[in-house]
Length: 205
Length: 252
Image (cartoon, rainbow over all chains, first blue to last red; front, top):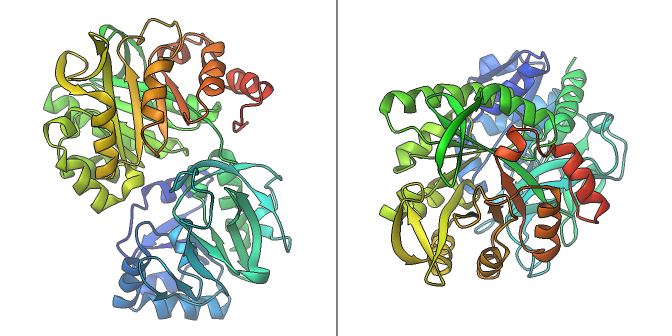
């Protein structure tokens, strides 16, 4: 069973429902003993990076997530949850992340053309790049997914598996071994999102 | 590049989807859950659920239905109607809404936008405005279009965006229900004044109205409609195919 990590950030209702809709059993928990039994972990997240990492630390879930990832448990970060996987973020200051992946999270402001609106919100196309990942095996070039973000990950090196174009190529999905992440919301991305969640479920088996 | 969005709007009263023409003469259309699922499976990029219930019982029923809808659809969901407090935001967000649209609640208390944007983020707060020309001036109307607030619309909407509203739904009362096309003049005035997504509402009668909207006003991000979708006059997959043929970027 896949465990969705509940650390008090955001609403996990849609995420849970979307796994249920593809016939996957999931549970939502903040309890390490419970989460240890999971075949795979989802790290969700909305809001500010600093708040989210602080909440993970308060409950020592940061160390737990790192341990599980290092043990080989499949881990997928979604939206801010993906950003937390990187070394650091420059959202309102400078904050250390989980450092499971190389790279940092930086503001879109001043790095994309002025006329583009921030946050980057809406449906945008995925462009597969870099290594072939089982996470995106059923995704076609140009498939659209739903984004809501104002910061993006850069210098992800070999973990980059998909980008999206918004004034420049922004990191859309990453994967390195068992550690994966989507900047977009698969649980809000209709049929394409479901394919990604299904692929993650298969990886967990 | 980001795609233009097509958004069906479901007005819900006492647990059923209704659609008014010029906000009056409501008629039952279908079940919100069934209609929501249908749209989610058939090309809608987002859904708007608007609660036009007046009673507390009706509101409770709406909240229950909303949870049911959110369990069934996997595209973004915006909820509006009767949003007056942060507790109202909380209530619908807990049911699975992604964005919350405020209208009369923000007119009564603009601080609601500021507080909600701080608490839930700008991307979560949508300002919805019902606007009508009065002696050649765009005026904001409250209470479902019945009451002229006297406020000038562009400056009102701009002030809401300054407070943190992350998106604007502009509903033209002048074109609503007429099916003669979107209110391009009004939409131009608003989309040039703000730098957040603007959703056009009111007046769509056929596919060409959407083509005209996105061609004339590239700064408008989405088109919203209700009855033409509910009654099958315009089918979204076909609409999007035509938009694509007209070089308008949409999600197919």
